[in-house]
Length: 448
Ligand code: NDP
Image (cartoon, rainbow, N blue to C red; front, side, top):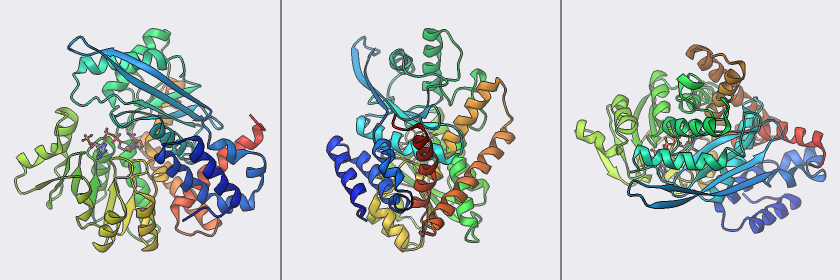
């Protein structure tokens, strides 16, 4: 799986040297450069005119101090980031992640992936990502509010409806977006569509909450349909129990599947009767509790400590929806042994390169994150459109647009894979289809 093209291999070496200690970023760049080998053979101008050289370097990285006061009156200092990676086809767009594991390399990998994902949606949005090493878990609402206000006090200088429009990600949901939007409005004295994932009373879009999970299932439905298959009667395993996982469960179930397992960062639950999603929502969305509380109510369900064991549960469809590199080679082999037919990524880069190789070499349908989880950002772009028009579409209108976009992403990715001689390789297809629009725009701008 090494890069063979001499220029691309050398560029990869330089990316590693220039961004030391950032393995997630190296992993994301390496996968894209590998996919672009046949593209560079067909269009050498992408190399000679510096497009590839430029696309791996963020346009701008903003790194800042976030001081705030906890409930004990102590000053706590976190670190904030915004990586404005590429604005060739529109304002920077991508979520904010609040999680203790956040550092520059994580935000860079996410921002880089976002360039191609956003392009695939067909909507005019560039790539960016941000976040902080702040951990909202266990914090009071007042602490989260004070942190969000401090974070936005700095971030508001760098974003804007036509410049950069952040959204949520791990640890950033409706509560955090509300606090940040309120602070932006207060400091800038303008009511602008500067964040997405907003509440419905102040400019949010219907379906945005559900969009990534629903979109993942629409993509998977299209991928299955191309092989004469569907969700109907299938057993599904979903990792995570956050925003993406919950709404993936809801849509997979609506499409006729039975979801039997979900997880959080401590462990996983297995309910052979099908997960009681209303209870999971109550635990995670209302109580902000732990997934193990599920078995207090459903005594015949099982809870096991540890995350990776979830992949040893037999299923037809696996939807990793928690975090990066959560599904490794060993887990992939277990899924294949147990007869998995399709894997589609709801989280960003949840499968390691070795795991993807196991799926692809065993003929398993594999939907990569860039394509499969693009429904969230696509609906964010629809929120931006509605904000610009000062008008709102109905749930059905947004949902229908989302399904159309996800089908289109599947078709574009499959067609690009086919065109470059890699039929059914949706990893390469998504990277290539996402790249072409951005690259052509960058060529048009000259060196800049
Ligand atoms: P949430 O914060 O709502 O949920 C994250 C879930 O993943 C929780 O169940 C969490 O468990 C679990 N998790 C987080 N970190 C780890 C870890 N290190 N090991 C195991 N489990 C972990 O986030 P989202 O649902 O929004 O995001 C999930 C994934 O989807 C991320 O990769 C994100 O980048 C991606 N994504 C999200 C989009 C969105 O619209 N929200 C859009 C596109 C991609 P716990 O509660 O224990 O922390």
